[in-house]
Length: 461
Image 1: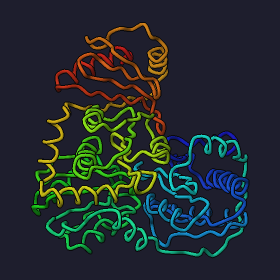
Image 2 (image 1 turned 60 degrees about the horizontal axis):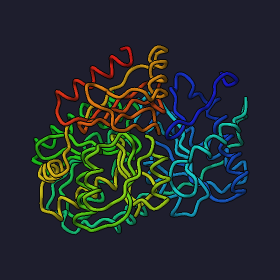
Image 3 (image 1 turned 90 degrees about the vertical axis):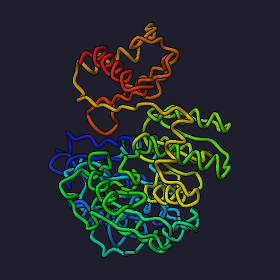
């Protein structure tokens, strides 16, 4: 397979099915290229290797360790499944030249992947991954095995993040944490318990099959978390994905908060209560209510394509807050990448310090900044759909969409139409799967439904 299989790094790493392209042969090819790039770029230094709780992740982490040590690097490997943000922290904390995380993040259990993390502690830029792709050989031999030097990153990580977040009043909270059988087991729960929080974990044993679920925290997959919150009378439930960079929240009434909603609560607190200053970076798929909030506080907003590596670049260029619609939030005063553990801790800080439940904080922000109805759809990428989408991106003569006038366009990622009734529509190809994704925001459900019909018609669906 290796000669015909092209290894491609998407929006955040290379991923594929373990019964398909993510074979040992192709993993060796990818690791060879990553180590060769690192040798050419850094020459020598420390490399941190981490892995998630999936099948084969540990053995592929061993291969990564062997590949780097055979190139003369001083490698260190985590002693247990490790969240991506914790590995990123360790890369920076230990002054490593780079890191490698074996993970497929939130993808189904049959997938695995590799994330390459340069020394700045965030996803590699497209320029870096393009060069790595060019260095992938047709075949790579198995490197000489070395017994790995291991370390535990948890204590250093928790100590550092607790120095950035004010947990002084959190002992009043009752919290349920759902690590989805993945890498964040024992992270957020321990951090909160140390400060007197009544905290309970569910799905808290490592399971490479994630209990038969996808390790992606969405409304459907967090139903058990919502049930537990209601049963125990908890104030908040917090879930992370398989490698810990994503998070969602459940309020005390069982309602679901993706980062597209939680970002308003967080931004209102940072800019309104804590009086932080700085720029916000958001992907094109994030709610326009965040723009209105930032405008109210005089905070500049930069819009970037979907993908954490684009947000990371903005954070390294000085942004104080980064937001992705479903994938999480990131903080310029912490790591230049999203961190689902830190985001969960900050929501607890906000609730404790304001003395307000999550649903009240949400209602205040949503009414103040006009959060309406947000819909996300996906369609399998077929040839007809691809042709229609390419035409839509290229043509500029269209003046209306879904019965409203087009007031603006953005083509930084697919095509985004801004409409004169305040609604917007984004149509883009997924960077990780053969899908076209559609995002719609409108004032009402009926208006959003009209725009869904319009999108399907214009794409020929």
